[in-house]
Image (tube, rainbow, N blue to C red; front, side):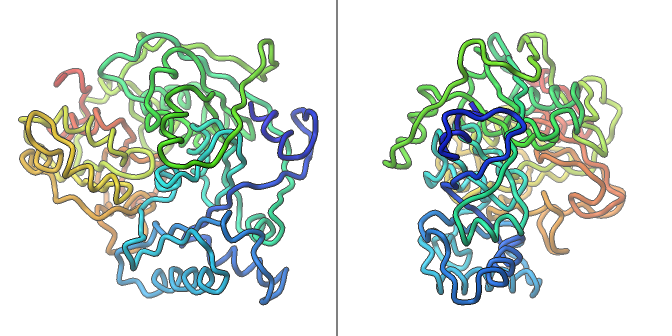
Length: 428
């Protein structure tokens, strides 16, 4: 799939792994962290009066350092606001207006910027999330982004593809987060270095788009260049509901050559955690019952989608949390869904409030990146946190002394009830 997309965008009949090709870019995304650096490179290399390659193909979504009094963070947003106004950028989701959406990777999909067969680049490593839509999506640095901003092209080395086939019905106590944590645990954080991670099989076909996004989101945690999933009815329905732009579907040919193929049976997998301080430090949740927790965190591009909150609410319904439990929806759309979606006659927001969770925070990346000192849910000192986020490096959520365990919304919710890491099957 990845080779076909890159060949089409390079104007070639075919490409092979290892080829270096100039690729036409459909969408360039940047945000408040890397946007100013990207703009600096663009203006230095192309000139202050240069025009962006296409004002409708640049998407700017401030999301990381939002809702803070930190003046340097506010300056970053101001730089991007001025740049977008000067270049008449069509898609600038200003956090100071009703146009604000939330976390870039989820907002891209919700606003119809993710389309099969396209090339989407972003100045954020988790841009690979969009591969769930059958497109080539990857993160790039500010220098490459500055070049794309001026030319609409990028020089890429074609990656090899590793295929992960997951068959069978997903048990009701598992989520995509459990699948990807197991895969990363098996191959390591460098196991897919500069490879496309292609996910297939009947289990993948049964997943919602939001769950597929979780899988592709964490391809980078295995060192992957991109994650990608074939297009099907689920993809088409999601995309066509959000954009009327045409797209081209791409599939891997029968007999296509892969660097490796790994096969999994969904029924044999268990609720998982990644222990500190690496996403590949895999363990079954049931094996970590002696780990006492200080906080639980449900949010981020990986675990702050509406389906993630629905999953957590199913576990928390009629129960109480015993530790501080933070709720940070990824986007405004998710935030609205917490007040509109009902479970057993109560809205999700009511279920969480009744369970004793902290009030729902406004949508942003918040504590996932640590961020400013006033970021909601930021870990302080030697706290032990269980989180639906995607990274648990030292300092990732604030303090370098904190210990972060990664898990699915089911497992985080179950653990919040007990105050220790808990296999969600105990409550399901």
